[in-house]
Image (tube, rainbow, N blue to C red; front, side, top):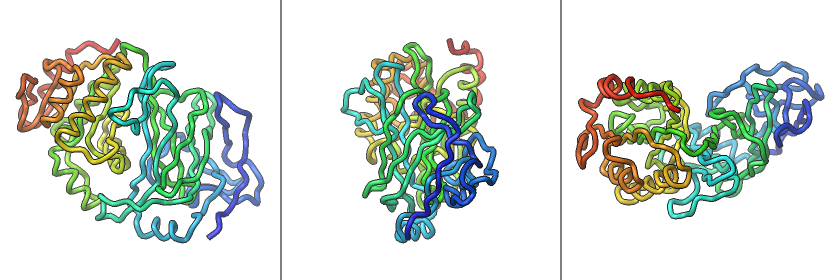
Amino acid sequence: MNRLKAQRPWARAVVFGFSAAAPGCGDDSAAGGGGAGGGTGGTPISDLTELSCPTPGLLPFVTETNAFASDDNAFTAEGSPRSKDEASDTLGVPGGPRANTYVAAEQATPATDQPYDGKKARTGNSAGLSAVALRGEAVSLWTYDPAAQAWLTLGRTDTDDEGAYSIARTGGSTELGRPVYSILEADGSCAEHYEYLLDPGTQVIITDIDGTLTLSDEELFQQISDGAYVPVQMGSAAELVSAWADKGYVIIYMTARPHMFRAETRTWLRDQGFPTGPVLTANALVVDETARTYKASWVSRVLDDFQWDVVAAYGNAQSDIDAYEDGGVPKDITFIVGELAGTSGTVAVENNDYAAHITDFVEPYPDAN
């Protein structure tokens, strides 16, 4: 199957190192981009300024191509609709150390701009532990610029044999908390990259996900075998995290889940009402001691390399307790829920519910600096 080519309509010149594309401008004979997500030249597309990934529907911009590069990929996407896309987040200090979520635990924190790294893959509804790579497919990056009231394109490439892509950061910066979307041009599906470059002294909250924001680790296991299953929240979990975010604290979600669960994780957090924040996932499946090492390395980056201030850290497992201690988080702000609540000198969150903790600790706590 040959790709259908479309002319890319340009609205204006480079802005912040990016290019802005105006929807609905261009040759009327040009094919629309993004499969069902695009629109033909001259035809109004959507007026969205945000996308709901992984299947956003009609896109508000036109991509260069709108068909799969191979019949195999088209067959995979049709028969295995569950997204296993990966899209890195970047954390760090402007002009200083920064790392994206693919940087290894044992690797020194880089001091250079981090690329947008990711992967395009699919699987069946009941096959959450597997992923079929979409090889040789066009991926482009897009973000919405509120000041310009335009969608900007940040780069474009093809996936490799593993379905992976890497697009260099070309300068400028996006508004804090505003996603950069990686678009699989063949079908208009997407995944979100986020960049959190924050000054030293920024106050943050770190939280585990499984058994901490979800009711137990079993919730993920059920979702693995059934892509339609919605994990049950721990009591008042979204209210807890939202209460911190409303006070101006940046939320860092740190999970032992591997990157292949980023699509499910992002979707669940968004749909359950959790505020946006960077999501840290592991380069491989990690458990017990390896989970401790991986999480401790990120806590150390946050505290030592970025010099951010951790105000509270939440978890449920021994690996959380140990990782927070190893990384330098004091025990009196380490809050543990579940069977290990209050062990090893941590502060207990009782009854598998954060409601009392919100009232007693979060609400009286001062707003972020």
